[in-house]
Image 1 (cartoon, protein in one colour):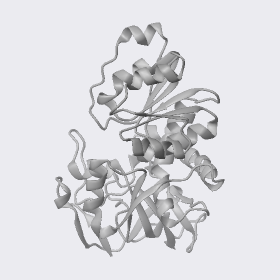
Image 2 (tube, rainbow, N blue to C red):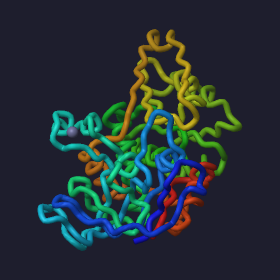
Image 3 (tube, rainbow, N blue to C red):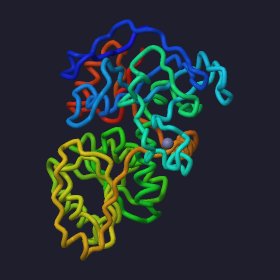
Length: 345
Ligand SMILES: [Zn+2]
């Protein structure tokens, strides 16, 4: 079969479209014929390499797959050939105390599929092998491209807003990066909860698209003062929840935008690792800083009910042939898209 492989870390030139052996299922594995792979920032980081993190090379990236089951191992009982599925990208032992308490992201063996999963190759291929436990039905109202775009972002956002920040109806939430994969899903989930959404985008066009998705207010961070706008919109109160994933460039403003007793939830640092926190705000305003990473399978299944009900829908910005993975990485890095980029074998 064909796959996008990199044998060394580097720029997009290290991505090669080449022949690799077809995957064979173990007893509890499923083989999926890939119909679409969602591109995530993880793919860029895996290709570039990250300090202090070891990647198995050669590497096939891709954490989001939608496709049709074509073969199952002898011990598989819940999935059969012909099923239309997407994948839960959290790979873990499923045996330890963390896994059996529904906190698989604390498993000592936890890995994100396609990012660091070693011998388990990622989704940038014509076929993938994945454990049965990582397979979930694709919502019937999604196209293959939409199915490939929803899993990882929905899981991440659900864990952030519902499980960690415990967002409630009537609360104000500030969503940074409204046009990103997670940002555009966060807007929809927060609206579903009944919160008032203030989205932040880098252009007026992105702000308009955020409003079309349901955001009540939108702030253009290139032309407006985000903290001043939040204070104006909330009558100087600030927001109960800040949805963070950009890190260094936005961190201080995120803290300043919080209401008394507010919660900041973060899952990423795309602009840098060093965030400055004025500790006077932390204790005087009794703020909560919440880290979030991935989520469990039950959260994904729960979130997909909202997708099936039409309450949350992924926006697919661009679909490219699998062989053009380098172009997809370039688009991710420039950040001019709104929603998700999908590769199609
Ligand atoms: Zn475990």
